[in-house]
Length: 141
Image (cartoon, rainbow, N blue to C red; front, side):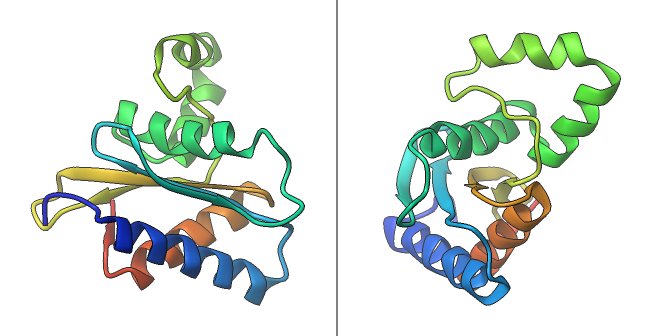
């Protein structure tokens, strides 16, 4: 597989929302980006705030830009805050240093896209991203 299809992206979103419902989370928003950081699909649940596309895309896009999950970027920010803060303005989707952005890889381990989830705690956002990726038959980095 060399890309994430629209059907797979929509499957990621549906499964992430289902995991959120199962856990009783706040309204979620999910962005699925291709390997170049371009949006494939985005949805936000009813009552999700308006900035959620930028946050979800920033988690996913930041992960793609640096080649690590947004959780790892948050860890980097603790050690090198000035460096991570400087990335947002130069990254097309921004960089959000909080868990919830997960890279999707092909069988060879190459990034083919990323998923960003926002709306609840960062740990819960990441759990929903991982659940969505797995349910769509994709592989998380």
